[in-house]
Length: 359
Image (cartoon, rainbow, N blue to C red; front, side, top):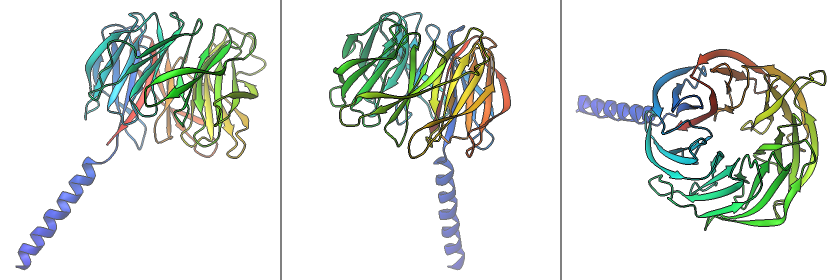
């Protein structure tokens, strides 16, 4: 009897261990290659941050912007040259299975889902519009957009705020940020009042990042090479300018432009990519006021068009579009400083980097 009890206890322990092992988080990194028809796939060692190559995924045409739904079941890609959008299922091993592609419009520059993961929002650099596609239960995109709204040239990003009630679209052409209301039940956008926030000549608001706790939104200015902070009225969804800081040293006078902005999951740091200067500018964010303080620039690969911070907030991965390489940095959680620890040859013209955590 004693031996039987021991065997039962042992079986329960083994089952518990296996259950715990299968529930452990697994991270995968996806890198879109503008010079090829493929997305490079890597598994991420969550302790060291090192990347290991997985089988790549072919795409119908060169992929651009990448995003995933909040539950990381599906990956969505803009196919900028083809004017299409693609949906993939994220498999348990991190691989991707194409679900469908749909006609979109000229040069879809940026894709993201709303906070429910039921709708895909897209900003179009050439078509000068934004669109909303419905996402099916199986991850498929609706053949026709639920809604299309003409905005202005060089719409470069779109994102809903943490409440999922408002959406913002920065445009590098007219130096303007468009403000919309968003209905998460219907997926429809409607103009807010005012519709347009002017950022001034030669600024070029490009992308944005919401603070996870404060009512503050950060934009990178492509032409001005700067970061700008705006207060967000959580009741009306209106933006009001707060401050602006340069992303490059005053002594740097050569050609440069911003590319991407990302905020640390803690909200304590925000980073901006500097093309031309080939660096990542870092800023400390005051946890109470949201005020920015520069922590300097960290050299990276030439033309850092895309970068991302992994969900744990320990690592940052930056793509060098001109060098065909990806750089891995370790993030100091106290100071925000970046320490380079690995470099990977990923393929021709890495454009976007996206990391997901599966369970």
